[in-house]
Every structure is written in C-alpha cells, then in structure tokens.
Image (cartoon, rainbow, N blue to C red; front, side):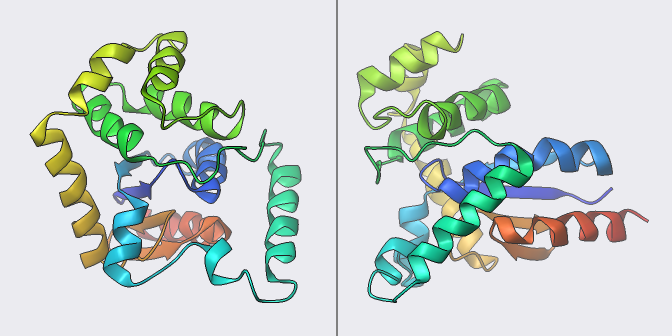
Length: 201
C-alpha cells in the first residue's frame, strides 16, 4: 500500500470538505491517510499565491461557480458545512496545536474537533480562550495543547512541514501525495483514490 499524505490547514474550507470524505476513501482502498499540518499562509508567501477569494474577486461568475461546486460536493457526500462568519481565521495557533497533537498521539481526534469548530459549528478559532474551550469540550487537553503551541520545537516543525511541502510542489491546500504523485484540491480526490489503487496493485 502506498504512503498517502494529506497536507492541510484548518483555514481551507476545501481541506475540511476533503477531510469529510477521506474515511470513505480509506474504507474502499484500505489506505490510511497521513495528515501533515502545514501553514497555508506560509505556502502562499513562498509560492506567490493568494486565496481564491483574492485571486478571483474581480472575475465575473468565478466565485459564484466555486460556491455552486461546494454546494454540489456537500450534497453528493452528505457533508455538514457552514461558512465560518469569522473567516478568514488566523490558523497559526490551531496548526501548531496539530503538530503537538500529532506528537502526543491524538492527531485525528484533534483534527476532527478543530474542523468541526471551523466548518460545522463555526467558532472564532484564533481566540485562545475559544480554542481551549472547544478542545476541552471535545475531550482534549485544551490548556496543555495551547501551552505546547508556544514551544520552539513545535513552531519549528510546522515551519519545516510547510517548507518541505512547497519543495515537493505544493502551492495551496488541500494537497495530497500518493507516494511521490501530487494532487491538489478536493476535486482531485477521485484521482487520489485511483492512484492509491494503481500503486497498491
């Protein structure tokens, strides 16, 4: 079975939507997606990229089409989704928290909780008190995770993840790697699944 990586940032609605259907792909293929925390702002800066809202704000019909695509995806997969009223949310703290959660062995639970509080029951997830309360409610050690987000090693690992992602070809999120094959965006999930099957033969 090939190594399958999901390079993500909680601030991307398309990363959330991808996360929501990853379990379906895992069930069908037997693969286990490895979640890799990256900082989307860092990737944008390194690649001279900008968010779709900024990139297409003056392109007639483009953002309307993207909203339609999201609506179709939600309906097809039965995903719960609400646009976060605080968007764009500065995700630096929660992404560092993901690094800490990975080191402590509960990354998937942490990812589920933070994506829930970003895009299902949206909260201001760049406010430390809101973050702590949300994590505690999910059965996670909110205060401990927040403390660990200030550790130099945690900060450095997130930065290195981001740099390594760019070095491999990433320019946004979600980005997937199946072995060394790169795929960008939720609309490439079918290709991701097909590549998992192809490499797993």
